Amino acid sequence: MNQLPRPSFPKVAAAVAVTLALAAVTAFGTAPLRDVPPPLMQFVIEPVAVAVQAEPARRPGERPEAFVQSQRIQRGETLASLLDRLGVNDSEFHKFVAADPRARKLLQLQPGRTVTAGIDAAGRVRVLQYRYGSLAPDAAQPPVRLTIRRDDDNRLQAVEEPAALERQVAIGVAEVRSSLFAATDAAGIPESVATQVADILDGEVDFNHDLRRGDTLRVVYELVREADSLDPPVVSRILALEFANAGKRHEAVWFDRDANADADEHGGYFRFDGRSLRKPFLRHPVEFSRISSGFSNARMHPILKYTREHKGVDFAAPTGTKVRSSGDGIVDFVGQQRGYGNMIVVHHRNGISTLYAHLSEFASGLSVGTKVAQGEVIGFVGSTGWATGPHLHYEFIVNGEQVDPISVAMPASTPLDAAERTRFLEQTAGLRTRIAQLDGLQLAARFE
Image 1: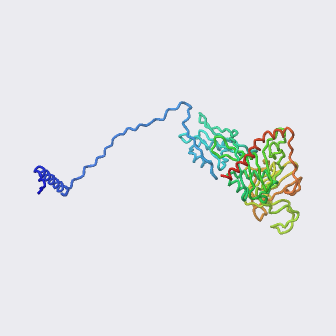
Image 2: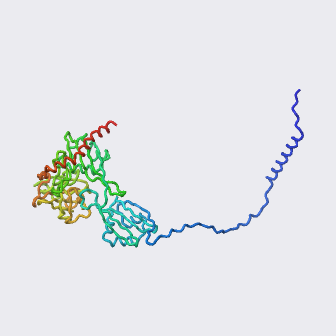
Image 3: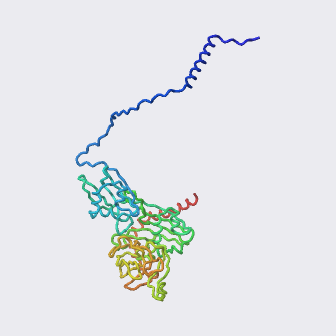
């Protein structure tokens, strides 16, 4: 019978020794602890060396470093709040702006515009730039860049100079489903392009009633922006368009006439064959509005409740809708006049005046003697005076007598002479090609 091997004596002794050791540790771990007072706390303060980098010494006349900050002007912004957001702490700058005639233009803060400033470590303005005026072509106030700079002797100076502009050309195709504005919006074309299309084709297409589903707009337009600015580009003008409406094709192309042409007709829109589209007056000073009351020799007055003449045309539109000057001219009256409420009268050439009444407010800076261009915003629709609702009362006056602005015959523009026609064909050939190429762009979009 097999027997298990017996353990040797040394191994047994080692096992017993380990067991006794563990027992000793266990006994020690369960013994009660004696109360030992905690050690006294001592505070030790030792000097610590911190390396401080001294500001480098500047040479005489050398400016402290400045950081550049830009802020977009908010609605209702004041100069104080704008400078606070820019991080400016400069009482001398505030005093300078209030006292200097050029620098005071900074107080004309336009919401959405960008102000850029270089500010030193002390919060003082080293340089600040702001643009006032409009980027729109033929604007009454062209774009001007105001620069306020602190020189080496810490004196502030204000300088005005024409704003440098950057231009680019954009194209677009829009198909009408409901309205022209909805079509351009769906195509990513700026709203102002649709407004210009309506102005250019004013009298040829009634955009309230003539539109058909499937009408197509092809347009080439110019964008302009201030150089070195964070402001987004704006539409300058349409360069060429083609609008297919109910099977009829309408076209227009911009052409600058030579310097010998009439000053009022130095540039304008023409058909591709060279026939002018320019009209001396817009028949609709309120865009996309409807006629609520026409010109009449006998109309029941809605307030006075008796029959009387209505020597103008009423355009119904929401309060605040832009009212445009129907032609180039000079403001002859701006203010309030009895039943007309807030009213503007613009004097034009050849004994013609136009009247705009019941306005909610006037355009900023408008006063007697102000020159206005055709299509320029001069006021906003309202219901001041004797009015039952918001609308524009518009009168067209020839040699002191009111006539119907919708039916009156407008004089034709001066046709192109032989030399101008040659230049016209040369300058517009590229635009006609671009419009033709947009047919392919539309087809490609449909088959994507």
